[in-house]
Image 1 (cartoon, rainbow over the protein chains, first blue to last red):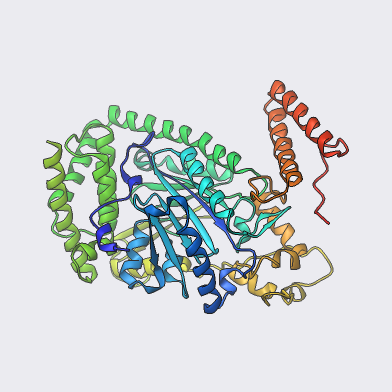
Image 2: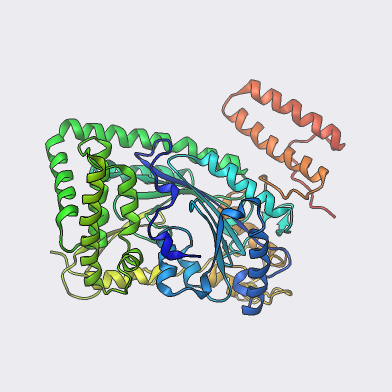
Length: 355
Length: 177
């Protein structure tokens, strides 16, 4: 696959066009599946991993929609390119850092990715912009069904689909939404939301998945339970709670606009200013400023930049993306300068497009 | 200005970690922050154990249970506990007694009622439909949607007649012979 071509574009799920896309950045569903005749990945030696990868790759690339898939042998990639795929949310960090034969099939629009030999033999992922869990489910379920026509996944009458980790057994499904909650973070009310979510068995994580810190007011909410509920019930549980969070965030945003308009406008303008003119900037600060700018666009305090542009910048200012843009490996200090240069250039360009 | 948690330079990055319902704040300088990022999964300064702990209810001690081995892939229960991953599908049978309470803990349930493989037999499919319908009936009654509940009850009864099963809404499915 031509990863260098990817650097010019962004996944369709970043277009910011789905329902409630001002607050719900994206929706994601992933299914975990394992072949019946093999041990799980952690117990499979390199020889077995090769066999598994070969078998699954063949079936995946025979799918009806595979004419719009590209396959990448992750084990043959340079470290930088693996990091690049992690930043684009097409593979997990675990997949990048693992060993042995493993790969990923990616759709042209980057909304579908199928990882082979990650924690489980197969992890199917569908990403959509905004709150679109039903669309995700329809697509992923179809792909799963098509794969099952040719493959036998290990399945038990009582425990459902068997997975390497008991936390995934049963449906093997992880349903999540990525939310942007700057107002709730600003007023420190976001903790209330997390506590409430934990009570109904929903997990909350900062941007970029497991064990990471909350950068830029972006949070991912997902189900913790995968057994004893149907996929639709799990999806509905999440779907039912998200509108409440959206309402809460919108309410607090409106209050901020009414009570602290000048302060807010100033903070947003300064953030925008910094992004456009800084000579060196860390990724952490970039996330923070982009978060303010994103809120500013939603509140119509910034009108010469669009949400898709901000969404794209969130990805393209990440370390591996920057290094690919510059076509070289960079140390932290150089990256911070490259990031600033990239932001200045892109923001000038986008503003030009919007005017 | 706060000091970096790991070295004594000034902290320029302030991280909020959400771990199991608790909020932890970390203050790091840029260098230590990048190490923290690279350290991915186990990036907890206190080296928090990711080991799974289980309840001992029977006669066996933890040491005895830990030595259980899967006859197919050779993984020991101890290895499973320390890496959080099983070795092969057969482990679910081999370690059944130890895993059931764990599953109950994690999911609150131990009977799958979601999608099943397309190759499943008709009677399996019907049985799954029953499980799902019974769950829906439970929710309908809990949310006082009595009309829906009545409809569900009718559907359940007609499927049960089809399958020639005794009319009981509480029996978990028997495993196939």
